[in-house]
Picture 1 (cartoon, helix red, strand yellow):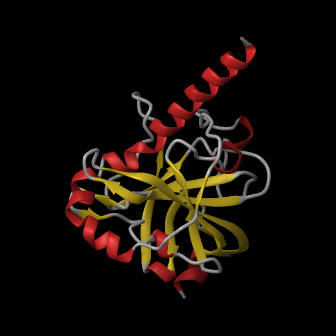
Picture 2 (cartoon, rainbow, N blue to C red; picture 1 turned 180 degrees about the vertical axis):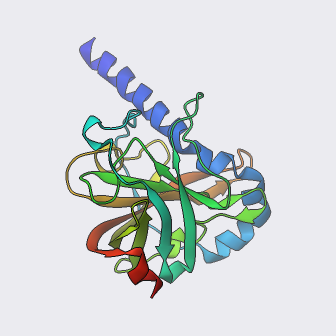
Length: 221
């Protein structure tokens, strides 16, 4: 009985994690369908990893109430300069995702400069347009990523890994955490596009580690 109960609990957690990020693919289904061939042509083959999914946190850490929120994301290798806004979980359990012009910061995770994983998520496509992360699968290890915060400080990261997970197998211990080593996690949809369900089968994940801290003025110059 104990083993069966544990199995049911694990399945329940996997379902919740699936719902949390499924909006990346479903909300942009019409756009993904319209430009799927273009994305297919640009797709980078990634290794698909298996991981046990868990429920993401839904409360802000009590010791991080004064933290500075990310305001923009700059990735030179992708010619990306995008605005960032706070996101959470919708009433239906889906991860709240901005439209094609914005990147979402998961406010119940960590933030740059603090322990844990800072999660930034964006569409690969949305309503017929390419999303901010439509080229995330091209981002190579070694690339640098700048996150500008509300206090005008800039946290610079270096990409150390790019991978892909099935939507129901996102690793809790790497993505949904607010302790441990500081990490930047970039998330979008990827893998095969299911035309009947009109969504992608996987999530592309990029992990990056902090390498420098500067000011917004230094970035501008």
